Length: 195
Image (cartoon, rainbow, N blue to C red):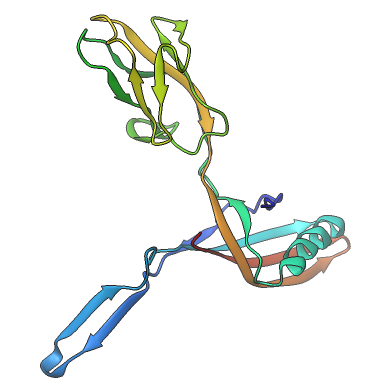
């Protein structure tokens, strides 16, 4: 599947509206149920401002070829992450499983989320020594590190890695404005699709 190669301007707006089936009964009662296996699929409103004609034409050509039907990959704005020698935990001689977690943002190191969506598998270290995946530990796609032997008490466990969230989307509408000589603005809406 092809990836959208252009970076939108800052200020991308994300909107989420769950799909809900609703049965309305008398006296104000209603019954609600999720519609489908993935009822929450976000939509992004994106801006590509002050782009040169060549880039604006390339963006439009990419979208026109797919005609709002063919999906493509899109890197979700502000989802990229990159950590170097980031703390994973401290060995206690008994525990063998640790979850890779990263800061929500570089300026908020104490607030963490699972480190998933790798662009390449993270590297895990024990006391600064690079460990071998498969021999020293197993890494699941959820970010769970399972060591073959429990790290010794006090062993510093760290990891290095980077990633981003890639969504499968369609673009059903976009508009283009000529702002001046060789300056074009494009607005587009990307809708995440299941699958």
